[in-house]
Length: 610
Image 1 (cartoon, rainbow, N blue to C red):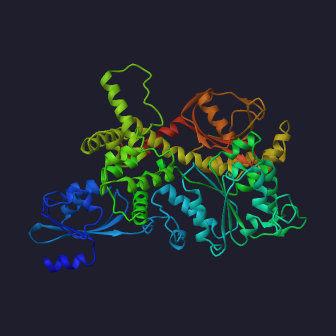
Image 2: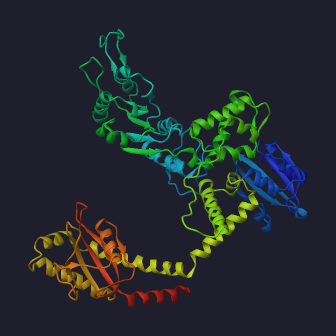
């Protein structure tokens, strides 16, 4: 056993030996920073409690039930990912071996994020652990080797400059300069000379030899315009010219010189709203808005917070020669804080705690001293707008709060903390809620809805294919000559009749147009259609509404409806010309009897009892 543990310690950071019930018999290793913050990892504790305290997933019980060696990654609440291997040994005991994986990037081998994630990563630390930020990274990788203008959007403090530096670092301009400019920090009377430079004698205080502007300094590299929404309108005109022509004219000069740059702009303002107010040039907005990348706020990347905390903790422990650790409860509290200042506020908080902590471990009490913690604010309040039994109302509010907490934090542990209940209670209530949802999903009403949607998908497809094979120019020509028989009307009538006969189950196929006062007019149909060309169709709202949606570009299928011709189900799809304009809609009528027979056939085929 000693040789076995010695061999494992040459590979792993920490070993925990338990009996077959998960009770800890021995804990040895390098005293990894994760493990010395929790008492549950001491002798006499439980491996299940260790998992609950340290990791976002609990796998020990499942592993022990299979009684076989297993290795997997365990994402920790405090930041690092741990490679964990469980070994069953003699007498039913277990060895749990942990190795910290020190990498600022997520394990992309199991994600379908494309080959770019493997080939291009910033060489400097750039913490990305959440799905929203993986999407951001993917867009950054796509723009880093081209010269397209990039507009970084997001709240203050989300890391827009870090993202800009990452694009520079990953791309083919990495050997060139990265020139940042804070457009909001430069006085209005100096911003033009800062950006474009000036020549000798351009103005009273101009240097003797003039000065190069930021555009010129960024030649062969990247110019980062932070807070671009703060630029004065007169400067926006000159910026637009540089972006369009890639030439710069210094103040006081009549000579322009070309610049080879990529421009990355950033703002926390809505430039679109500023354009409407006349505060930002519309042409410049579109010139900047070539590749917009939105960086999500930290409250939408909760799963990234522990990794960011760990990153900043290592940074400031090294900077200030400290050895501070955060307890799991402190990490949890940081995860459920709303972070109005985003990553910048989180970094400042970690730095402050490292500096001011008089003890080696930062706990919940210390975090509460530095944060104005008021708990998360729900995006919507539970509302009851009709009378019901009080207990039923309590259960309704409870269910909504549980759903909100799980949607926000994606974790039973964090949801339990924010709702101030124990984790077992949260687990039990959430399981009950999930069971309730599943039961509702497979209720007779919902089973019927699932079957109906299967049929609707097929009917939508038939309408869409029919619309695609109807030449739009023939429909347009027929509209111009509705009052007489033309070759177009005969050709379309034959084509629709052929489709109706080939399908065999369609009662009628027809084309409707819509007048300016939104009346549905029959244009042409198969040979058996009961409405005359040019006649208005007047029907029930459930049919007409789906027809109107098709005129807005959305194919759809009606519920069963009744009009003066019978009981039907109709699928609609738009007919679109080469310029993308909707010129008419095609409709396919199916009888109620056909629909019911299809429902019966599907029920038998899928063995579903409704």
